[in-house]
Figure 1 (cartoon, rainbow, N blue to C red):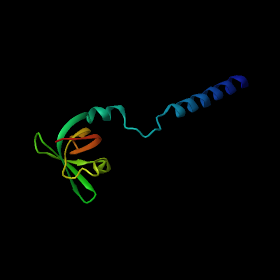
Figure 2: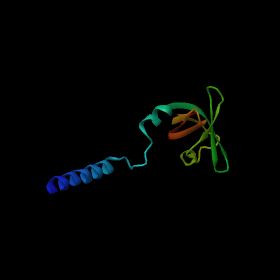
Figure 3: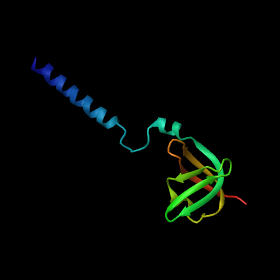
Figure 4: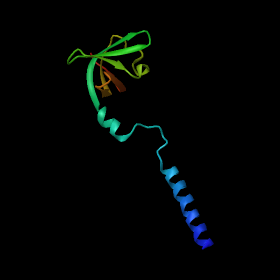
Length: 102
């Protein structure tokens, strides 16, 4: 009977350890977050107000807050095409790449 308890305790500890290791600790967004913020290519103009950046889309003249303004440094007033994750619920974008337009 004592061996059975030791075996059960050992298996319990192993299961807890395995589940702790298997948990996602990378700090990445959950998989459904990408679905709510699709990657899109949009054209428009970059505007800076101090350290805060905004992007005004050509299509509808909508202004988007830029979540990572450092990606657009040096592009103030430029007409660009962005590849960005668009968070419509927040009115914000996260820029992945920038291409200058003429």
